Picture 1 (cartoon, rainbow, N blue to C red):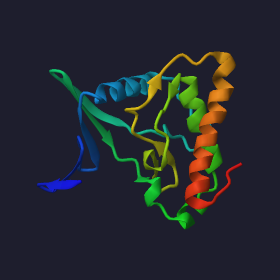
Picture 2: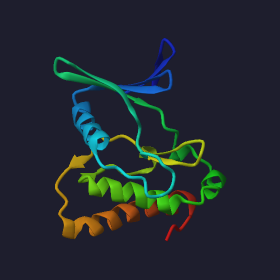
Picture 3: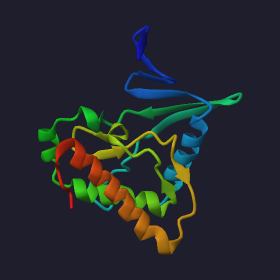
Picture 4: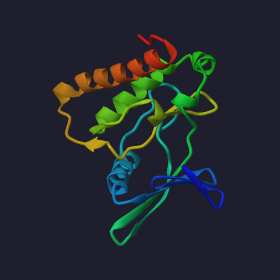
Length: 167
């Protein structure tokens, strides 16, 4: 990471004015995932009334490159204290909400780890960084398996980082 005129730049990502600006050809895949999420029937079932993913502020196609701008949705999990995590009493419900909605919309994340899960000031979890995400048909008979697998991945992250068993 380096600083260019008060902008933090890491790879092809700039953080400025509470937004992330991404520039590169790989962003196109992430852009299509946002299209899917924004037009999906994403229903918050955890009671938080949240989308659990960043809001796309704007996007732009410039020649063969894409610019994607998303709002900051909190702090990455690897920067959050164990005591703060313990204060969130509905983590399991939020994880189920995210998992069910992703699988219902035929999206598999592909890079589910602590740096791609954010926590905002209200304790709401958000999934970020969809550039390794796949859009694939998940057949009805396999949906519960995919949901359980995603929940298991979340559980491993919380167990490893905070020694919290969410089962």
